[in-house]
Image 1 (cartoon, rainbow, N blue to C red):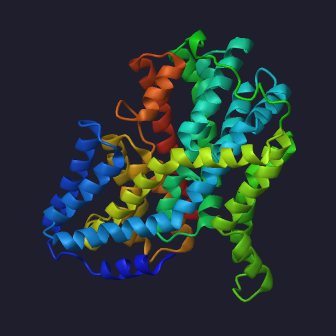
Image 2: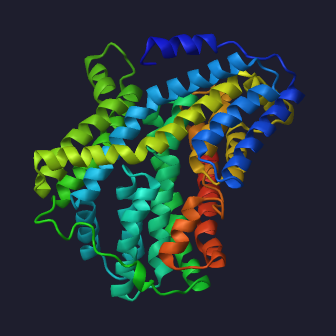
Length: 465
């Protein structure tokens, strides 16, 4: 918590807001989620408003006093924005610097120049995974699709052979790897260790992206054989720059926060002494706030100034990076409010009772809930936030590694079968010039493969750890 008011609100909302039975609570949860789904899908309402109204509806259906529901929602919104809002903002700044300076293009050009024809799908998945680390999914698509189309056109490749690996790289980063909003909020909701989650997320992501990317692309190219649409091949975003940052400097800047957070997790495991001076230093520099702040500040020099940005242009780039994330912050905050309303209504205990009676493993339960909400709303972020709130009590007695795996299970479930209610579905369809059936056979199947394969590796890790 970063403010006294948030702490007071959280304290007020700590007690259950209703003593409704499990049956009424179950109906209230389904009704609240149904309200959100209908508002988003039928009325095309913004997810922030839908989550806010859905939270109030949930409290009402559960028999809670309106004032208690509002207190729970406000506390959840405040604590969520306090914990992840700054991280999302710093990630947006780094991503904007990467795009505007030509650093992303530099990575693309360098890797493609060294990749043979047979290695091109693997090069594309590597590029997308690197670029996808600091960028939001939609920004990553807008940045990567022109590259995909250009490579497919100039190299006479099947569009799916090149495009699927790139999309897989971006999607896996979005669903499993912080500092993307979904994983960050799930880490906060489940009180998981960020460094351990990041490390295990990378372990799961590598085989997942290989199977869903280059391997599946072979089949996708047979099912859907299309040419890159000429009208969608735009100018490269940094062609008007006099110079670009170097490949090495760009890579170091992107990977700096990842390395610092992993270093913190490693020192905690090896040293395991909070009073140790080395661990005290890594606890600070490896915290998400400091790690991302360091990368953003470094990026101003290694990316911005290296591309010839003046102080004024640097300030303008930072300012422009923050405006587009207002909607994301509000959605994430409202999702946190919905999560807190669920918890304070006593839904957590209901989930505990349900999981005990039916002997459903916590990891599988988290995945299934996220899958259901993803299919209904089309939003991976909404699915992650809602599912994390529902299964949060299950993480209370978990080990550090299993709490991290629960975060990843929820993230994997949130990627399941993107279809017509997902903005990403239409973005891919239009950029690639496909019809709905072709998009389902490629993009939707790829997302499902990512979700299922990631969950399989998560369950395997749960047996080993």
